[in-house]
Amino acid sequence: MLLAVAPAASPSPAARSLLMSYPSGDAPHAHGPGHGAISTTLCVNGVEHELLLDPRATLLDTLRETLHLTGTKKGCDHGQCGACTVHLDGRRVNACLVLAAAAGGRAVTTIEGLGDARTPHPLQAAFVAHDGYQCGYCTAGQIMSAAALLNEPCGDSDDEVRELMSGNLCRCGAYANIIDAVQDVRGNR
Image (cartoon, rainbow, N blue to C red; front, side, top):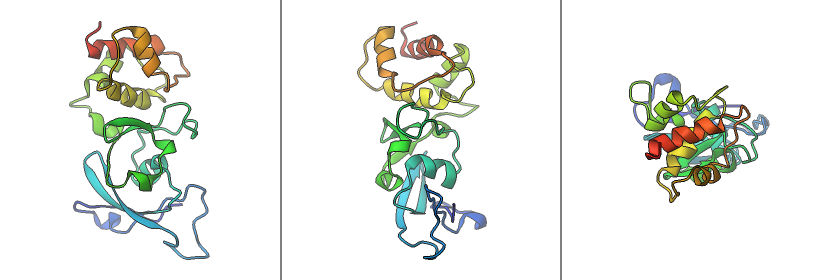
């Protein structure tokens, strides 16, 4: 399924070859590696990656399978659950609906690039403080969507936040805690 990846900045010897993602699992053995592949540069979390991609590869599959950034989750793979939410040029998108090649030359931010254990994004800290997660599967998508919401026009009420977060599903039902976390960061709690 994979052939190689090379970050543009100081690639390790193991990462010097290029990875290729084949979403349908049908690597072109009969045609040889790279047949039909396209070259693109993805800037993910501030790091440029020179990639050779199957033109059918989604941004989600490329992030998870090629770049090994597994914080972004694959839920429905149809753009209906929001588990794969990432930022593309600062706007939230469902990575399962974006072709990786279409993200070339644009800034992609994943949950790994939002904050870390030492310096978490305020929403990451608020999700912990308000118990805005249960099983944790949707959490990355919820946080990424909420982080983008902070820069979008949104009223002060819980209902308005709920509406703007409606593209992100939580099967565990932690919605009240998620809204509390978002509103806390927005200064409405």
